[in-house]
Amino acid sequence: METPDTDPPRPTLAFIYDRHATLTTTALDERIDRCRRYAVERGWVVAGEWVDHGDQALCAWRRARWGMLAYAMRQAAAPAVCLVDTWDRISWDRADSAILRLAVHRAGGHCVTTAGENDLELGRGRITVAAPLPPGRRP
Image (tube, rainbow, N blue to C red):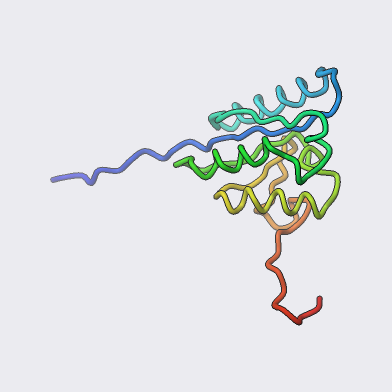
C-alpha cells in the first residue's frame, strides 16, 4: 500500500523587529534577546532581525526596516510572525501601529509580543485591524 507523500509541517518563522532612536544600545540588546528567547521557547526559527534606528525609529512613514521585514515575510514559504518585545516597539500611536501591522497582515503574517499578545486573537492584541467603511458611510 502506498502512503501519500506529505511534507512535514514547516516551522513558524519569527521576524524580530525593534526600533531604537538613541546611541546607547543596552535596552535594545535586552529587547532583542527577549525576542530571541521567546522564539526559541516556542520552537520558532528566527528568520532575521530588523531594527530601525535614529529618525527612522521615530516616524512610522520612514520605517525602512519595517518595509524590508514585510517584504521578507511575503517571500517566506512558512507561517510567519513579526515578533516585538511590546506593542510600543511598533509605534506609540495607535493609528500608525494599525497601518504598520496591516502591512504585516498583507504580507501573510501577524504580530506577536513577548508577553504572549497577538493581533489574531480577539481581545489579546492592542487594536483590531478593521476594513474601511464604504464611501459615504460614517462610523
